[in-house]
Image 1: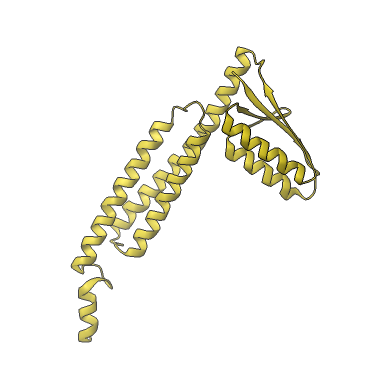
Image 2: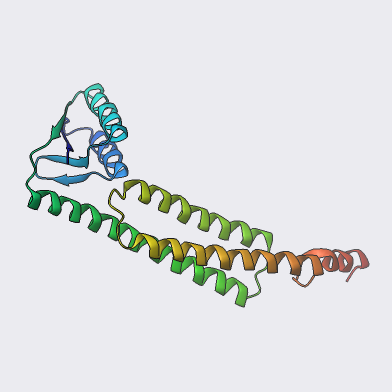
Length: 192
């Protein structure tokens, strides 16, 4: 297997350049190790690291991209395990967000908060989780074991959200939510 090893040097100040570079490398799923950042060699990752190398040089630094071909089997297995552990941590964070979203939906249902604004907020939370999961899957080069569990948790959130949206729609159509729907409008017109 071939690997990409990216090394760079940037001036210590301003630190925002280093932070920018760190964020780009983490977004790719790169592992930071002794002496550089490691990724499996693929054409898309090679192109992205070429772009990052140019960015480093535009920021007044030096960037180097190497193709590593002589990893021992033990080194390769250790690197893959580190990639999977990193994704496992990320998937655990996404699972935590799924639990929070499910609890939020249940709480709003229990408190009868059937409003359009609540639907929008809950849909925004679900979209954030879906987007994060999509990005995590792009960085999951070996299919970390927790990926399927996260997919199920997201499906559960989406199902609970769909039920909440349906119930909100029905209650608003029936005018059963205080301050919303046709019956509240009728009460206002009658001076109630």
